[in-house]
Length: 338
Ligand SMILES: Nc1nc2c(ncn2[C@@H]2O[C@H](COP(=O)(O)OP(=O)(O)O)[C@@H](O)[C@H]2O)c(=O)[nH]1
Ligand SMILES: [Mg+2]
Image 1 (cartoon, rainbow, N blue to C red):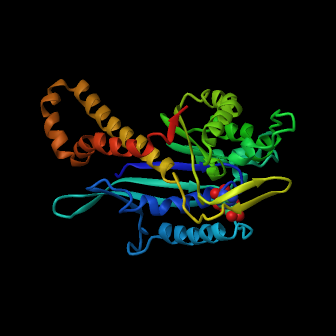
Image 2 (cartoon, rainbow, N blue to C red; image 1 turned 180 degrees about the vertical axis):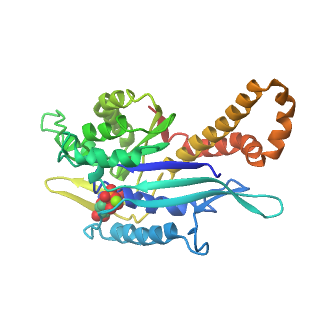
Image 3 (cartoon, rainbow, N blue to C red; image 1 turned 135 degrees about the vertical axis):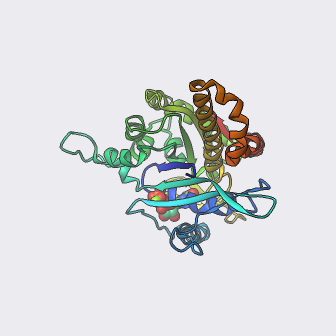
């Protein structure tokens, strides 16, 4: 069976989750994903391999975010139902034969699934319950946070009021979703700071990270109570690269003078997920071999043959270091461990 990684995108409605998926797509697909014998692309339809529903949906969403980047008053959005986006990591051998090494199943769930506050008969927020259904069995989750709400508003005397962060990002509910669901052991949470282009000048990214650390730290502590969460990372993404917040009297977005659609860092969360998954896959394979060997010591002599037979594991192990190093270069300076 092909190892499958389940990724769930979480975050409030309208934060830009679907748009982020669209913006990262051209940066993930070959030739941008340059790992020689490995390539990443949207998975084909199971019944009709010449089509890819994932690709079709991404192309449509990409057109919308591009249009929005020219005219930010032209808003759209809303994911009424959970939607699945599948990617496959393909390996091409010397004879140009391709095999699927890893499947990435990305779930884009409606923001309300995380943040709806209506309560069910047990007194749990309905949103949380719905999100948890998707988070169950997830290996990686993206926790999308609106930077503008995180940074604004500042009161006149410089005191941070935090209302917007609480009202828009709803970190308490987001954490409830993640901390209380049956995620997989060794789960990775990637905090994705959305709409970061407003802070890309004048070294404002540092201020953004500081704000994240001070405002979200208590929630990350809460997250860690779920022992299945192994690593927490954070990164900032620029889905449009040009639409910036003009936080004067009225909240509004404008296209920064002389700039146009130019997304940045959007692929980082998925690259981080792949890095995590490759490591996990190899560990699982090694663990399986170790368990067999422990039970029947004489099998130890046969293990080298097992590795040879099991081409994927052998190859993955050999390539892991290289692919990880290459991905690592892309993540360096832009993705951080909490
Ligand atoms: N300023 C800004 N607006 C965005 C960005 N991404 C999406 N939007 C707008 O936010 C709305 C919701 O986007 P969508 O991707 O559907 O959000 P989702 O509900 O989290 O999936 C749309 O009207 C977009 O125009 C972004 O990076 N910057
Ligand atoms: Mg959406």
